[in-house]
Length: 216
Image (cartoon, rainbow, N blue to C red; front, side, top):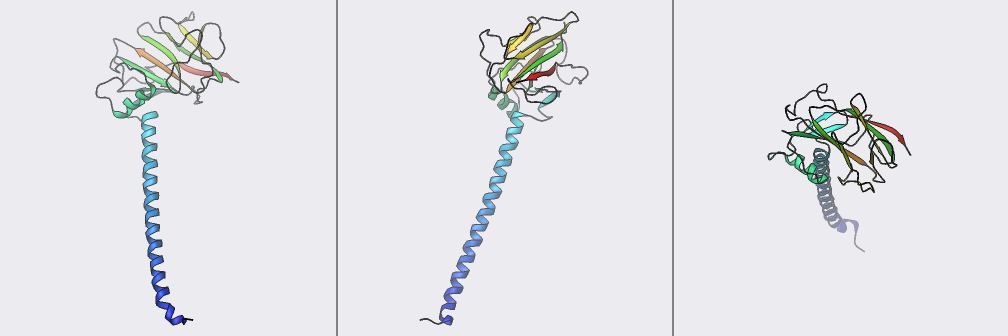
């Protein structure tokens, strides 16, 4: 049997080796955690820039968001990626603005399990359209093949205002079916030929109100 003193150098060498291996593993773990955090942060930031946008790329009015360089040849990559994901063709924002809404005017996520009324006021000096999609940018299949209203097809109230209902079941007046689409997206496109589209204040640009009526 070897003495304790004879084993000591071996033990010391093994201990040093184990310590170095542990330090190396710790350094690798720290780098992996750092790179993972950078990757998650980068992906999260990219997702936010593409899906939500910032003040540099969007114009906001209540629940409505317009991507200010949409349809332009020099549009930033986040704007291009946003509309590529939706699969929609955009008019240049020099001529028209396309607003998207994923929530109602109270900030609640739009969903086909709820009924909504979109209320606004028609103006004779510009053309507009209101279209409903699912959140993947697909038109919602329905027997009536009804997906949108425009300033030319919507029925107006006597005072010049309009109300468009959104719901699974048909309702009188202007109605857009949502079926079982799940999460919804609304697109409001407005064209004002004689007026610059960008830079209007909240007071100057009045967009429709999206009001939730009931949920099932």
